[in-house]
Amino acid sequence: MKKAAKVLTATLAVTVALSNVSAFACTGLYVGKQASADGTTIIARSEDISPSDYQKLHTVVPRVENQPGRVLEDINGFQMPLPATTYQYTTMCDYADAGDGVYPAVCSNEMGVSVTGTVSASPCAQWKEADPYVEDGLREAVLPAAVACCSATAKEGVENLLELVDTYGSAEGNIVLIADQSEAWIVEIYGGHQYAAMKMPEDAVAVFGNQFMIGCVDPEDTEHYILSDGLLSTIDALELAVLENGQYNLAKSVTDESRSDSSNMRTWIGHKLLAPSTVGDYDTDTFYELFYTPDEKVTLDDVMAVYRSRYEGTAYDADQAGNEGVRPIAVSTTPETHIIQIHDDYPTQSAAVTWLAPGGAEHAVFLPEFSGITDTAAAWKTDSALYTEDSVYWTFKKICGLADTDRTLYTQGVEDYWLLQEAMMQAEMEAAGETVKALYAQDETQTAAYVTALAQQMVEEQMANADHLYAELLTTVIHNNGLSSGKTPTVFEATAALRDAAEFKGYTVGWDTASGGITLTKGADTISLQPGSTSAVKNGAELTLSTAPYAVDGVTYVPMSFLQSL
Image (cartoon, rainbow, N blue to C red; front, side, top):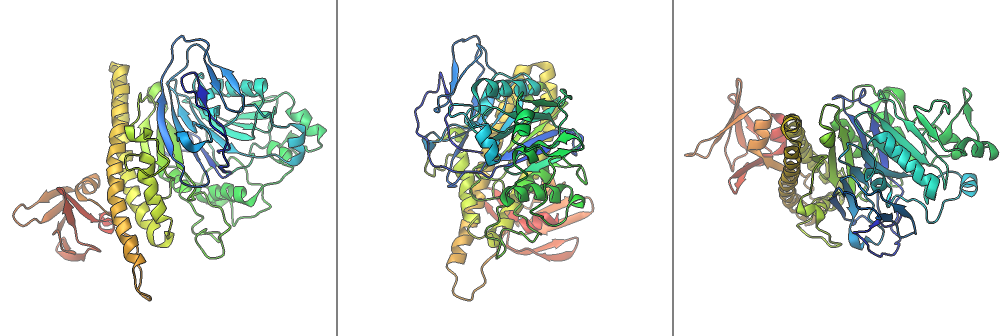
């Protein structure tokens, strides 16, 4: 959750002024390895920044060997001495002219440690007065990098983070998720000096808005909890203690049992989507729990759906009349959403697969990469406050900008297209995981080269797909904008490349060079198509396509509704 600041290092020293960029609506998520369908640990977060034209850059910070004397700085005066050797890690930073800091957002390092931060949260007024923020203390602007650069395990990352708060104080209330192949932790920083960290259960899930969430704790259980020295005594001194079965409920205590609907409703929808048997309609007075058991094992698609949620199917659907004040998870002001899957059976350096949705999950695609990449695609690093076609962020954000203008007409068509692309990329990444394991067994340097090239290839492919999608969407928007009064607007439906999608679904695709006809076969099924015609035949029965297939540069495109029927 962005507020304001700048990461400054010995090699990156820029002076910027704090801006009035505002955001207090990030959403965090966790899926334990025993609760996920594929056995991976998942941590995730969406960023939220207003206004919404806020570019994000994806980079790799290289490993530095034996260079003492360096510092990690923040424009508020925070300075953290760096160890002589720091690890390689990825970042998702702000563009240089934002005037609001670098904000690494999400990092995965060469040691297999991943961190996402932060989800901003605020305690009650009494707490703020008793444990005031430290003006030159640790902020989100440097926090993920401070953890990733020098932590060899998730537990060490937690300990390093808490030591920073002990030493320098905190300038903000923040929630951070840190994970590796062995364990995952949530850290809540309640004020200038007080905090709690909890090892998250492997059989549970969590979705939460901007509110402190850690409930009852056992201070004697040092394997699962770390509490700041003055936390419980401060709660007692302020007479804020909420005890349940003899234990302090931290979230209720430090907030005086107060939560905003904008945050609490996002926590509720997590229950509604992943464990619908546990909740009914939203209740503003309910203090929804952090951890719960999902009704079914959670898939990557389920997590992506959480981040695309606008409370559809509930009374709080943000796109329905009367719900203009509802704040869902998917909003126009999301500059990026990230999901990290940590695989226990992958080599440590490439164990984390990060899925990045530039421009926000609702109308963009999640781009995958293994940790251990040594560089990112050039388009990830194109820094421009104005739209430019050679930027990953702007390539996808332009689609978001169009689709946001009328979600009823455009959202489903855009999402259908990206869901197909994500399904194909998931299959490709699963196969690539086996390649990674085989390469690592031979030569780990080959692994780094392979995952770097693969990530860049996927970016290039999906940027091309985005340009195709944008052209079709823009055409539909312009068509609808020019309709005469009383005319029915067109609901957008994309087309997609036939061969890739059909082969992914198990079909063999053949072309008749004489007639131009196309034949799809799979087992006993045969489908015949003709470019330029909406008529098709499946096993002797006639079909009508919503639009006619067409070819551009040797690629045949067909409507998504046809591909969905395969």
